[in-house]
Length: 475
Image 1: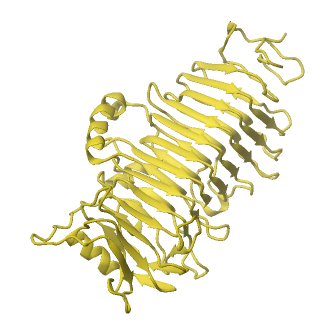
Image 2 (image 1 turned 45 degrees about the vertical axis):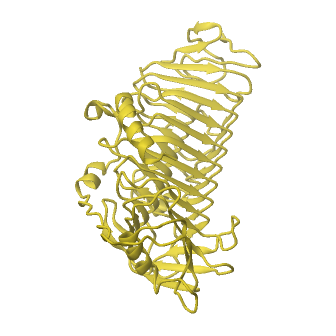
Image 3 (image 1 turned 120 degrees about the horizontal axis):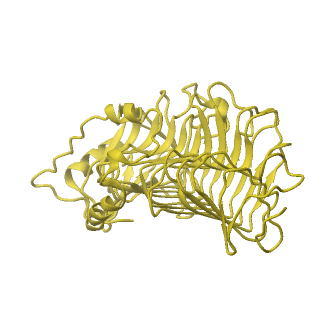
């Protein structure tokens, strides 16, 4: 992840690529983006004590008990480190079965050599119950990061075991939030972030960068939400801002239970989303969308080896559209890799439009390399659009398809469909199943531009079909 100097250079360079003219770009913000950013408080950083001696590297127990080093609470540890700093790797070892804490904000000047790790003591299974504090734009927040180089590691033996549950006893929205552009190299791993059966309701998010940009974080091998209490909006939200640019995020190997979106972005940096299992529960949300992974305005993203179960229960209330992987506007020159994902969308009694992969933009969606995926749209009760791959963008898109399986079990619908007038280039290779294109498409292949022809037996309208190992037009 980026260090301070690299961060400054990246912001300066990247601004010419995507952010210098941000007020004029045709990006697609969330419906409440203006409200979120308008409600952000002013951050006042903790002043380091003039004569402060940084804490030496070592293990500090919470509570201290009979150990040589420690603090009475995690709150006391964080406040003290904010004042004094760290002179090496400071391990804060949670050494009780249950710990109740006030809200926490990390604000120490740390770096790659002098940083803080919060984890269970060896052999301990810990439940960390944190009260919510002030909102940083996305609702009451439990644990926040004004500055970086902090790790929460839930393993009690140095492996990938999950021995730390982070939860609350009060209704709250944000368990973990990045508050400023200085929150770099935040690592959340091996945790269970969920509500317990205590009547407090569900978290709104699991981990969110609070619309600030410039920072970076990693979420690895966590359970976020549960089938009983999914995060009712987004499991992981990668949200930057126009001033400091995108947020770099690595989200790998997680089990995500969410209402609206498993992983969402808006003004993001270079991101990797891989090996995640995303399960969506539309009855848990009040938002109008239900997307497994959502991309809006960033230079690149790798979406690899994910399993996405999008709305396998019927949508209720305000949900108007379902998509496994969905793209909105993205900047010129953007490259997006969608490889080896398994996407399963739609319940049998579903009635709203349903897509495996959807480009949905009033601007550009740019260059997509879509290889070795399986997109399955289940038969359902809907009469609207239900397509394996769909396009409703008016800007240019290049879609490179190789060795995908596209299965649309909805009678009368299509494997690949576009209903917009924007340039939509498709490069196609072997392994496509059920490929049916409707009108308003320009197809670019190794054999040049191919005009629309009707493919008999595959529904109304001018269409393009291809079979076998070569792209060809069918009469």
